Length: 319
Image (tube, rainbow, N blue to C red; front, side):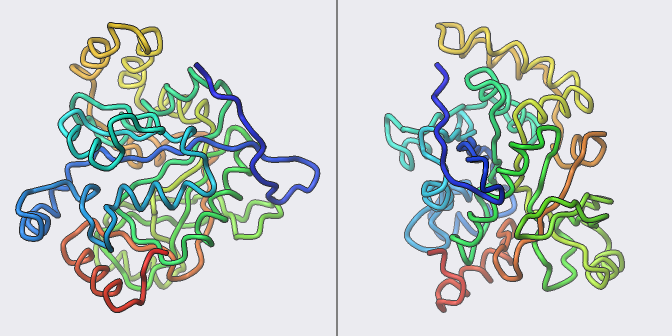
């Protein structure tokens, strides 16, 4: 059953109250690169989102707590894996207030994003969603979520757009995805907004240094869009995957839901939403620039250890 949409806050248009978006927390990764670290710290190769790496809470719990003051937990969808059921219960409880969708097998970030978009569009047609990975270190959470709210308000008013948050780099990192901003979008927002001119995933050292000098941004993979816009991009770029997931709404809430999910994923192709959809879709894609020092990815052991050290020293503690 669809939830009623309640006005949450006003962003930049004093004449229009912005309705609350949905939050999608992407918690289905296996965390392969961090397995040596998590095994050493916790005695088992636990996926990183279920590890308390940056304080006493797990990365998943930190992400949910960060989102909560802006987006109600009842409008939050967590995308996990059936194989992680024990960890999900540990973090969310036996009867979580958020909706939890468990994928039977991993099919990449495109499947996770499109599954969430299918569920939201079926339960709340026309809704906006913000997608959050849960392996990030956020230094100033209030500031970060204020920008999220502004971006969500923008895409709610301009339905075709997909808007990413881009982080200002402090080094020419070759393990991140990069975004080259294009022309500014005239929108009256507090934070700069530009069309995306180009994506580049994991560039060479020389290319990363050039993009760093040119003012390019790191792709945080935090983005806002209407569920319909996400599904339109999926049908354009990964039609076979989108087509398989499109059959699921008929089974949600029925005794055949689990069977339908397994059937949809069994022959579904694996695809990255960044490379397979965002980089090639013809719809408008923009990037909103985060303030310096707000965001840091911790997807590799080296970056995780640096972030843990900063947190331990009190320099980047997620509030």
